[in-house]
View 1 (cartoon, one colour):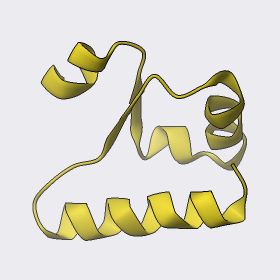
View 2 (cartoon, rainbow, N blue to C red; view 1 turned 180 degrees about the vertical axis):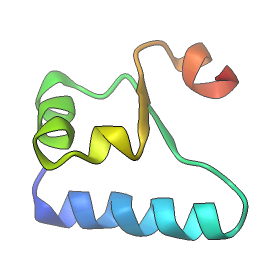
View 3 (cartoon, helix red, strand yellow; view 1 turned 120 degrees about the vertical axis):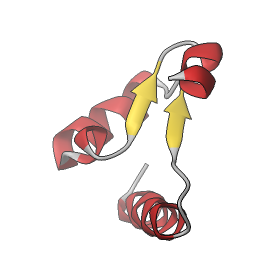
View 4 (cartoon, rainbow, N blue to C red; view 1 turned 90 degrees about the horizontal axis):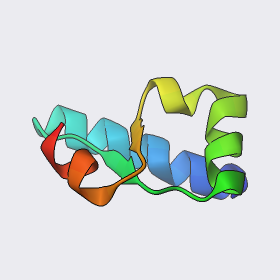
Length: 57
């Protein structure tokens, strides 16, 4: 995950939020989750360990 991936997630989150939807990540790998945490994106986009939790919360 680099700045390109981060920017794609931010753009997707904005577009989905404006359309009345949401973006959640299910089972991000340790490296991806750590990157999201470093830039603070984990506070904007919900990250869930199990897929079913991401789909139901």
